[in-house]
Length: 125
Image (cartoon, rainbow, N blue to C red; front, side, top):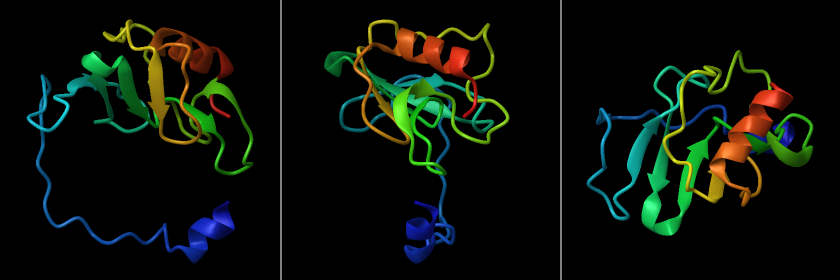
């Protein structure tokens, strides 16, 4: 997988020319996602909850695929990160989201609460 990323120049992306920050709430974009801050993978990491779709995009807060080993399975924290959504005291305000779209791997359809619980138990891969 790493070789494929190297061939695709994934480690040398085109620089971002403009950044628009948001502070929370609902984004004024199609689908009107609710911003859920999930610090840990990165300081400003957030998830996007689509209540009308029963879906949350968690990005790299939880992954289903280890990009270094290509192992798949159940939700875990991203590999080789200090902590992904490590704060056990930070609640996920999306308990109704059944479908979880992760940054790596297949979608998890067992709910965000279970995905986060399993990732916390599994730790970083």
